[in-house]
Image 1 (cartoon, rainbow, N blue to C red):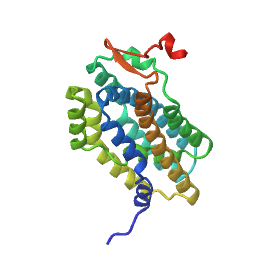
Image 2: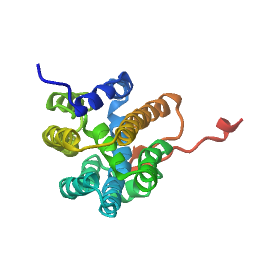
Image 3: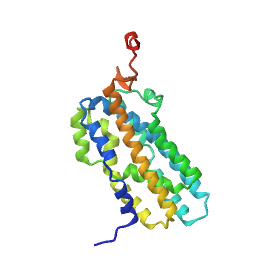
Image 4: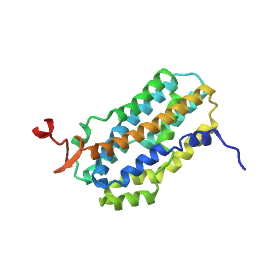
Length: 244
């Protein structure tokens, strides 16, 4: 039996029911067709900020004279190239659903989206850029399967062309996960750096679950939310009686 690696230990920490439960609640929701639109908008808020975040982490790593940071910078250089353009894919997916990109770009991201990204800037700039590996482990720890994507297409009834980004992740993320695991096993991280990576990963999983749960809860409570109306995302207006 092969020994448990550091990457294995991190992945075990991330096997929590929180994100799986949030995903299930969204996918199995009666209003999943509408929620999928909101989901893509939320994902755009995350992905459009991811490349700038990775570039910041790489610049910070390059500024440090240590082997861990040099290896991290090399890894991020390659990963940035591989991840570039995904925010554009999401805009194209939304256009298939009749949502104009100008309406997506001007949306104000939720506090959970901002917290997911903002926490990484804090750790990268004020602790150590290796924290970004926890963020990436959370995003790529369990890639969507082709079966999952097919199930979601059937549940929503949307055109398959609106699932380009999810399909790409199903195809590419297993390799990205393996590359990250190999890096985590190779890096000579200190105990403090491993703690940082672990905290970063667990916080990222929690934030992602919060993003999904907020979409579902907003729909169920009838609160103002992102909706598709005549090809645009709009916030429903309250009637005067709602304020009584």
